[in-house]
Image 1 (cartoon, helix red, strand yellow):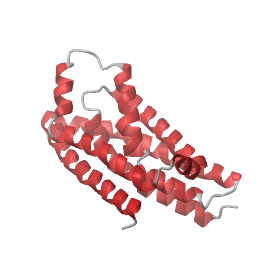
Image 2 (cartoon, helix red, strand yellow):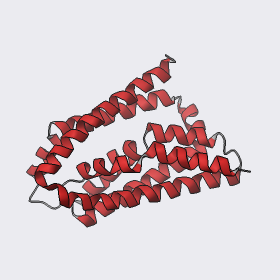
Image 3 (cartoon, helix red, strand yellow):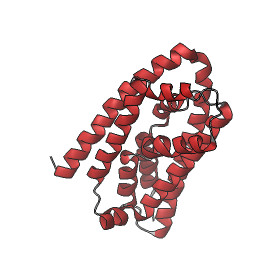
Length: 209
């Protein structure tokens, strides 16, 4: 049976790994130009998909990666490379160029769904770090009831993430066009550094350096 210390440790680990406050400004940059309703849809869908991903890894993570022959190190490398491409687009305004070309057209449902899946749900929310933490915690929550508690903890943390993302849109009113441009570039640089760190950690894990 899971002890109180185990539950507190699991909640703390997931909360620190997911870092909801750190996701808020990134969310603003990714959803620039969207309405409040569209942002809410992206936040809800992204949080729900991320919960599904982490829940699956909590139940079958180690087995699935083992069957596929995929190591956590390799997953970190892949996630880092994908995240680096997003940071590149943010720094050099490639996303802004595409958005400008379609500024007269409404944002489609497919576009909202795409952003919610990638890069919000994966790899920003349910990234290599969160998946790694989930798989490691699942190793200590071995019983059926304990796994159910772990999934409940993940669901609770995801509600916190969703709440933070919903509040993030209020910050957009204080930024303006110039503020968003500056924020997007700064976040792009931060994401670039973060993605490189993902790759470095993945290489170390893959080659046991």
